Amino acid sequence: TAQLLGMTATRFRNPHGLPDDEQVTTARDMALLAQAITRDFPEHEMYFRIPALQVGKRMLRNYNRLIDRYPG
Image (cartoon, rainbow, N blue to C red; front, top):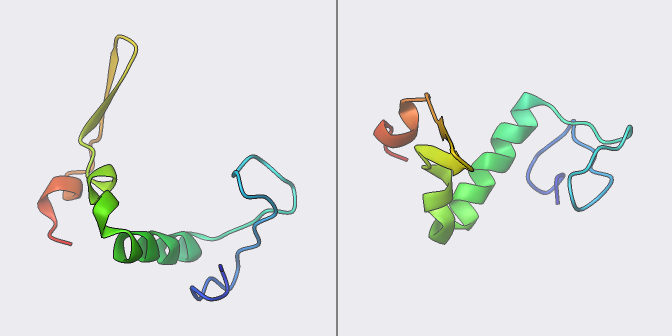
């Protein structure tokens, strides 16, 4: 699937994302994956626009202002 998305420097070794010494990727390939996810799963768009998360008593804010202001 990574190859089908044009991810040329990525090698996934497991389906769960846990560490594996043979699993590698690049920022470019992660950008391609992010584009594919937002394109192919628009019904989950709200997960990509989260301004903050509450973990226990802590509020973790997203300081990337583009998250809510950049159309698309």
